[in-house]
Image 1 (tube, rainbow, N blue to C red):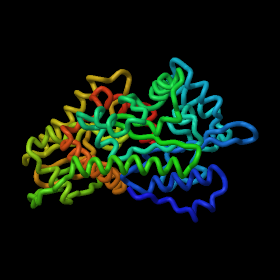
Image 2 (tube, rainbow, N blue to C red):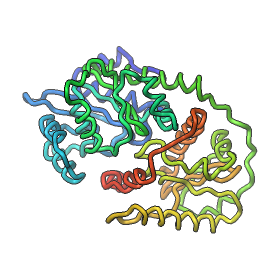
Image 3 (cartoon, rainbow, N blue to C red):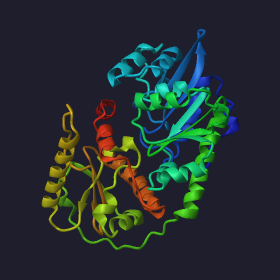
Image 4 (cartoon, rainbow, N blue to C red):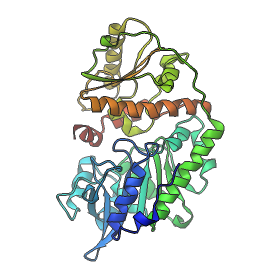
Length: 383
């Protein structure tokens, strides 16, 4: 992982927030760290004698975020919220918004409370491919523990208040933050932090580089040469636009034995599910219409098995894996299809490498449903 920090450029930024924007943009420049709105960052700063958390606002990408993309929230309110035993999503959003010193700023990240309870000035959070590839393997918990002995390791927990509450409980009773080099959330991502922006950024790059080196040694991937079969793409009447991926990676992925079992094991990181759904359409014969019908019936069964009071979303797939042909992503716009393709490309590589570590394993189906129909994720999708 290349370290993009530039001392000369960094020296131009004098305020806490300006430097926060700079290092956020650095993180966002690497697709191996964050994709399309993924990850979040924050900085704690004094404003008129009060400590304020400037945290990434909902709807902004790290690669392009500007100062106005950060939501300024009163630290005192966030720390009080962390102590609560229960807090609904709607109440969390309302209380965070009420605690903002600039009401015109975007809604704070759903991880704002977690950023607040980490007692360092600068906090970085990414969904680094290398980290989630290892943690999404069947031996992930053991491997992460061995690779990062000085990190706080958290088994998968739903993002938002539940995650912040879990970590808040774990850091009571004299937790030694000085010895803690970061936090790794299984099946989700990694946090690094420091009172110095460069040091926090460096810690992120160093940790991800360590994970990448482990994968290079233990999960090196050799893509086989596959000539794609002919396929009439006009049969895929899923959405208005599509992105056809017949790269060596996509062809290798689509030519695996036991294809359906291999490619329907869930998302790489939870927030991807609102873009891609939990599993793709898998086409292994010429009867595309019947295959699509079975997919939609299967999605309805999945929804009915876990629904409470949610309204079922579109039952159509977001992408398809076509045996010995490649991978096709769908969208209402070309941009949407391209974004889904980006996410799927990173997922394919991670799945194949995790299989080298003993097998790929995502979050459970109930956890997937909870994330897909989480009101805060649905709000992102609507935005």
